[in-house]
Image (cartoon, rainbow, N blue to C red; front, side, top):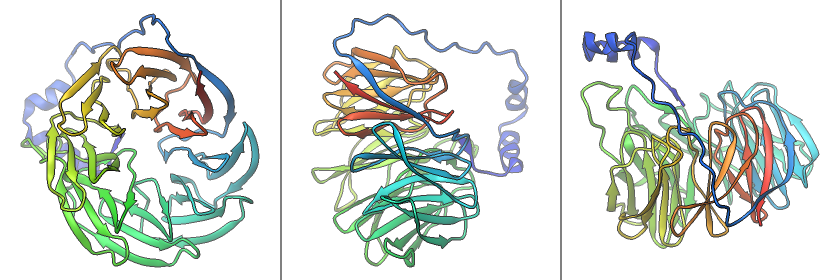
Length: 380
């Protein structure tokens, strides 16, 4: 994750903390090592079905997408791929590097480029359908839903484009704090709203027709005296179900709201930089130290906690076929039993970190590594 702020602002925030803050940068503080993987007693089998290399994603916000029988992936150099059964169907190229993607739906595949262009490709052929020039880099994965392509520009601007031609339908703007994270973030659409999380721990329900704000809620309230301490962004995707909306935040909380009124039902002080997953009765969250928590969806109470992956840069949980899957910095995918959090299976998808959120495809798991290896796995 990268802090989106000028270096001068970060240094100023350090100076506010006093000389002890700067001195600590040069002290010989012992670094806590990440946990070594312990042997597990497997109760399931995680099997690689196919693997395909698309090229490195570097610091871009790129994750795979599933549409029909195909997986779509991209690399930071501007290439977009359609992959079916482990084979390339087509490859398309943007004129500039890709900074965010891939969004897929309604017959198109969408990415955002470095100079603020949103490019839509035909999902079947790879032909360019339209290009929309915007005012800045995308800071979230594009959402393709129904008649809209919704993107977030920078930290404060949400824009809805027409899915057929890329013309602007509406935009929503808000002010944000001076510091924010560059982390995997997504938008969601349900009923009459588009839901977007922002810097400062806020989440907005935006009318999907007019672009007007319906309500705004606080996932968390920034705390601390310096800007770095008060850094608290909504990360991952707002998740919806049974009339509730849940989201997680960095240096903050996991909070569930009544979706129509924006009233918080419960909150837990758990910081996450990757986001949450949810099923019909639990919310799953990976905290800053790599522990995976299962919380009761109705009350927020802890159901179980798995902390044997401490400091392994564990990714966003994925609810899959009665299990919870998470990735780590060494390219491992871990399958946890949904009822108690015990390890059920483990498979190494690649030797490089899996930073991007994993997705479900055809009843299995798709992981994209930092080196650009797409791996499709199934639980047996």
